[in-house]
Length: 73
Image (cartoon, rainbow, N blue to C red; front, side):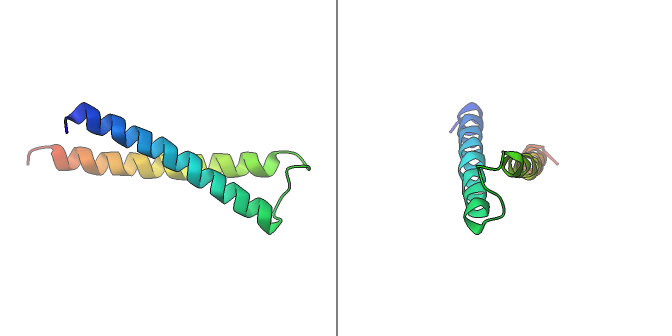
Protein backbone atom coordinates (compact mmCIF):
# COMPACT_ATOMS: atom_id res chain seq x y z
CA UNK A 1 0.00 0.00 0.00
CA UNK A 2 1.38 3.42 -0.88
CA UNK A 3 2.07 6.07 1.73
CA UNK A 4 -0.89 8.20 0.67
CA UNK A 5 -3.34 5.31 0.88
CA UNK A 6 -1.99 4.38 4.29
CA UNK A 7 -2.42 7.95 5.49
CA UNK A 8 -5.97 8.15 4.16
CA UNK A 9 -6.86 4.79 5.70
CA UNK A 10 -5.37 5.81 9.03
CA UNK A 11 -7.23 9.12 9.02
CA UNK A 12 -10.58 7.51 8.21
CA UNK A 13 -10.06 4.88 10.90
CA UNK A 14 -8.97 7.50 13.42
CA UNK A 15 -12.02 9.73 12.78
CA UNK A 16 -14.42 6.77 12.96
CA UNK A 17 -12.80 5.57 16.17
CA UNK A 18 -13.03 9.04 17.69
CA UNK A 19 -16.71 9.39 16.81
CA UNK A 20 -17.86 5.89 17.71
CA UNK A 21 -15.94 5.61 20.96
CA UNK A 22 -16.86 9.15 21.97
CA UNK A 23 -20.53 8.38 21.42
CA UNK A 24 -20.26 5.18 23.44
CA UNK A 25 -18.57 7.03 26.31
CA UNK A 26 -21.26 9.73 26.21
CA UNK A 27 -24.05 7.14 26.13
CA UNK A 28 -22.48 5.32 29.08
CA UNK A 29 -22.38 8.52 31.13
CA UNK A 30 -26.00 9.29 30.27
CA UNK A 31 -27.09 5.75 31.10
CA UNK A 32 -25.18 5.87 34.41
CA UNK A 33 -27.05 9.03 35.28
CA UNK A 34 -24.02 11.32 35.42
CA UNK A 35 -25.96 13.82 33.31
CA UNK A 36 -29.11 13.97 31.19
CA UNK A 37 -29.82 15.45 27.80
CA UNK A 38 -32.83 17.32 29.18
CA UNK A 39 -30.73 19.40 31.56
CA UNK A 40 -28.57 21.06 28.91
CA UNK A 41 -25.53 19.92 27.00
CA UNK A 42 -22.76 20.78 29.45
CA UNK A 43 -22.03 17.11 30.22
CA UNK A 44 -21.93 16.16 26.57
CA UNK A 45 -19.76 19.17 25.72
CA UNK A 46 -17.33 18.32 28.52
CA UNK A 47 -17.13 14.70 27.39
CA UNK A 48 -16.56 15.86 23.80
CA UNK A 49 -13.72 18.22 24.73
CA UNK A 50 -11.93 15.79 27.04
CA UNK A 51 -12.30 12.87 24.63
CA UNK A 52 -11.10 14.99 21.70
CA UNK A 53 -8.00 16.07 23.61
CA UNK A 54 -7.19 12.50 24.70
CA UNK A 55 -7.85 10.98 21.27
CA UNK A 56 -5.89 13.76 19.54
CA UNK A 57 -2.93 13.33 21.90
CA UNK A 58 -2.95 9.60 21.19
CA UNK A 59 -2.98 10.25 17.46
CA UNK A 60 -0.16 12.75 17.71
CA UNK A 61 1.94 10.31 19.74
CA UNK A 62 1.28 7.48 17.29
CA UNK A 63 2.19 9.77 14.38
CA UNK A 64 5.45 10.73 16.09
CA UNK A 65 6.33 7.07 16.62
CA UNK A 66 5.59 6.24 12.97
CA UNK A 67 7.59 9.18 11.63
CA UNK A 68 10.53 8.29 13.89
CA UNK A 69 10.35 4.66 12.71
CA UNK A 70 10.41 5.75 9.04
CA UNK A 71 13.53 7.90 9.38
CA UNK A 72 16.80 6.19 8.50
CA UNK A 73 19.18 5.84 11.45
